[in-house]
Amino acid sequence: MTNSRETDPQDELPENQQTENTESESFTEEETSVLEENQEEELLDQLMRTAWEKSATDIHLDPVPDGLLIRIRVDGGIRPFETLALEDAKKLLIQIRVRTELDFGRVFTPMEGQFTWTSEDADKDVRVTMIPIGATESVHLRILTPPEALTDITQLGFGDRDLEIVRRNLSRPQGLVIVAGPTGAGKSTSLYSLASTFDLAGIIAVSIEDPVEFAIPHIRQLEVDDRHDLTMYEGLRVLLRMDPDLLMVAEIRDSKSAVTSARAAAAARFVLATLHSRDAAAAVEAFHYLSVPYSILGGSLRVIIAQNLVRKLCTECRSSRNLDEEEKKLFEFIQMTPPDTVYEAGGCEICDQYGYRGRTGIFEVVEIDEDLGREIANGRSQLELRRLFRERGFRTMIEDGLEKVANGITSLEEILNLYWPGAQDGIEFDLGTWKEEYLG
Ligand SMILES: [Zn+2]
Image (cartoon, rainbow, N blue to C red):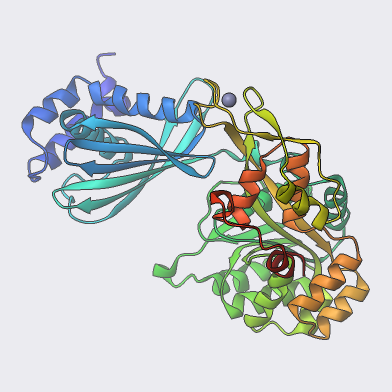
């Protein structure tokens, strides 16, 4: 190992950092010497390992008077982790800079980078964003989940009927499939999952994404890069010249991209796209607002999947309880027989006392048959569309969610929180408004 200086990156890093460090006032010589003892590496590795064990997707580091506040995001919610003392905080920040190969001379500007964290079971890519806060900085680490974990569409949480609709339509030669939902609703996961059902090696598959989060084998993935004038629309134009069978767009935000995607779907391509929208009926309206003519929409749309995410109850510690009268009404309102009991969150070692572990999608899936296509082409309103959807056996996200409550997968509190914040604090259900808003 005498010549490891050439090959071992760990060996090179302190040297690199030392040279840069002389110009920086934020890091003292003392810290450099600690770094050479390789102690910070353990700190970052420790943080990464614990976060991974807790299934965290993000790690947030924020300066507080007595050090660095560490919080993690698990199942969509922020959880306090610990506060690192000042000395350790400095070490950790240095370690992150070293691992991400960020410039030590630049301490007063926001910086982005990436590193690969190697653990026993797999390598995980970690995206790093640092911003200066006073004399120190805030850091966000995003742990990018490898795509293997996302591929199976049966694991997303579709009900049997919805899964069948999705499968049937993915085997058609062309058309537009929309995954709609608010931010953080798991749209990208679904999109990658849907794409993975195609024989990607046997077709030409391309994508334009903002940003590309995972590399998917056999998909030519192009990332939006506004700094180099590669807008989503420009990317789409180029990709469409590459003779694609499957085009993925994540996410449609502007008129030109919306129109181009819908036209491509009408002209013998299969297009999978995500769109910001509250529900399935609103997705049609959202496309129309983006200047896509109803006639093109009606002719190209095959399926609209609207979705959101709810936390799954920890099966180790959930406990059953009876429904009260008001809650029973919720079920009866959507013509569901209220279950005798539902489960509520407990708390145990396995779920870190939170009562929930992992998340699942709740969905509404609409198949756009020829008749519905004609109705959409005729410019039907959201309310009319919702009625037409229901005539075809469509289930809303709330209905899908309440079924998951009846099956003990999630809690009633979780569904109410999502659609009716405040309901648990004693605010009486206004079933009339609820029906109008969500059931149409
Ligand atoms: Zn538990």
